[in-house]
Length: 177
Image (cartoon, rainbow, N blue to C red):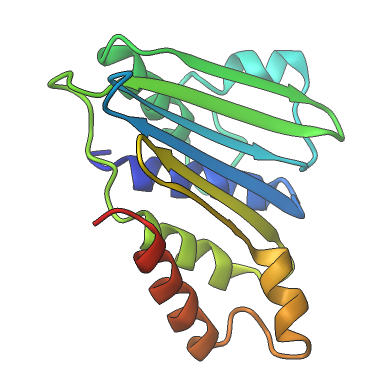
C-alpha cells in the first residue's frame, strides 16, 4: 500500500471484525525524531499466541472469501523496509495491539495519506464502535474521542451524513495540512 492511511484502515477493519467496541488509533509524526509511529489497539476478541505468529504471513487469513491476508504483512514489511520496527501483541478476550515505526526520511516510507477520510470511513461503518484518534507531531497534539461526540449528540447518530461532514471539518481544522 502506498499510503499509511490505507494500512490503518485495513488493520482497523480487522479490529471491527474482531468485535471491538473501542479502537485507539495513534499517530506520532516527528521531524525532530525522524520517525512516524502508528499504533492501532482494540478491545476485540484477541488472538492466541499461535495466531499472532501466523498473521504476519501473507498466505494466512481467517477470512473465507480469499486465500491471502495482506494488511498486517504489508504494514510490517513497509515499516521494516524503512529501517523501522513492527510489533504485535494480543490476548484472547482482551484485544490486539499493532504498532509500527517508520524512518521518516527513508525513500521507502509511504506517505501518510488521507487520514481524515480513513477515520470518516471507519466511523460511518459502525456507529456502535468508539474511536479514540490521536495525532501528534512536533507542533500539534490533536485528540478526538467519538464517545464524547456521541454524548453531545444525544439521539442523533454519529454516522449521519451531516455529523460526518462536521467531523471531517473538525479533523481538517485540527490536523496539519
